[in-house]
Length: 520
Ligand code: ADP
Ligand code: MG
Image (cartoon, rainbow, N blue to C red; front, side):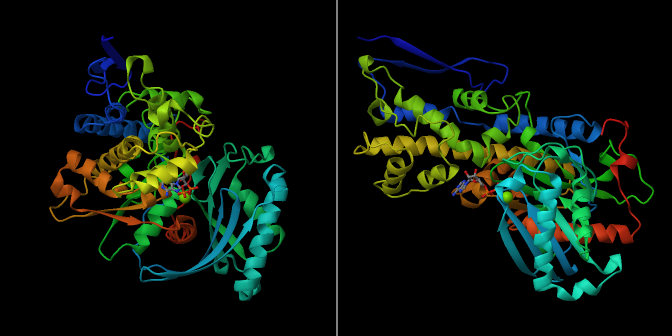
């Protein structure tokens, strides 16, 4: 039997306006597709061309500007009221508190003024009951942990009564908040298994400070910190002398970035009397292009989105971050197990078998893609092992083509994630004008998160995409540095910057500055 088989896919590749295009035409019968050709066809669906990149960067800049003007845009562009990044010469001892997942972390950080620091910390699990109880119980528990930490490490501070000599604390709170001052933010909702209804709509800094005051601890909550801002601050402090950090970017469970913006561009803020020239903006870029004007959409992306808890939202994040890449991969692999009609002689992955694991939505971690993608051995031994252990499949693994097919798809998904990540970076870098200001100027980017840290060649693939947009010369003037521990040293630096701003008489608050009052 032979015939013309036409495959359609909904991924608009070269022409964004074209919703359906021909992805493949092949003859069955005499010219049946091999498994590797099938896998290449799927991998090609994850292509994101230079042209698409350039168009997307223009769109990102448009949405940045919109978010800086209006209060109700999806890409929120949240003013953090932190006016600048540190230089590396800051000194002092600060506390940091991080609550965001299963653990509660209290640290004290001694900044030595030369880009280095000492950190001591204590970690404790948050009891399940505290995650779904009352705000009083949770914050009393947190204050208790802070108390025992200070008793152990800063006993002398208990004698201190003047607020300015108290320990200043940076508070990393990784839940959605509406931040209205450097030390003020209202809880919008709980995520990640927490549910404390009485805290919603309440200032989380106030909740923490009250619990601290109830125990008469010598601690002042100076700054509320988002993890992207923490990453930016941590990198700016540690970056080599003469390197100015512009962006802090997270590629972990989710993706987001913060950067230094000129105040004159933050149109949604009124001009303040003691205005500083710059302010750190938390972009919330995971929500870039929810309208899907420029982002790619393969059938696998669409299936993921439909199965997600928030279809139509966080569309950029769903193509980049650790929480989602494993699921895109699972969808693509499943499609290959059913790729060809056996009656027509085509090849199917794993002889057409999908394991129980493979059929379970969101069952694959992104570390699976890292392990599969980085195997350079001729027999792809690691790929085989991962497929057996993580995908729960054993059929067809004696053929190297099977393993090559799996790797092709995995690499295509990782590569697209890296190329998409370059959109945000290119847009922010070019909007800042910093690389154009002088032929020798440099831009530094602090990055954090397991995807950028562990996915093989992630940074190099991001750089390749940046070269295509900004050119080789400009890309050569970019430096990337891992911004480890934004919620520790980064939060401490936010507390320091907040205190510095206060000493300078700068008291930014959204209540005073946000235009269109009533919308915040
Ligand atoms: P968080 O986002 O909570 O700060 P991480 O930065 O560690 O934590 O990111 C966790 C995410 O990274 C998870 O979604 C996980 O799938 C992914 N991940 C973990 N290990 C790896 C790895 N080796 N390679 C790629 N992604 C990974
Ligand atoms: Mg993190």
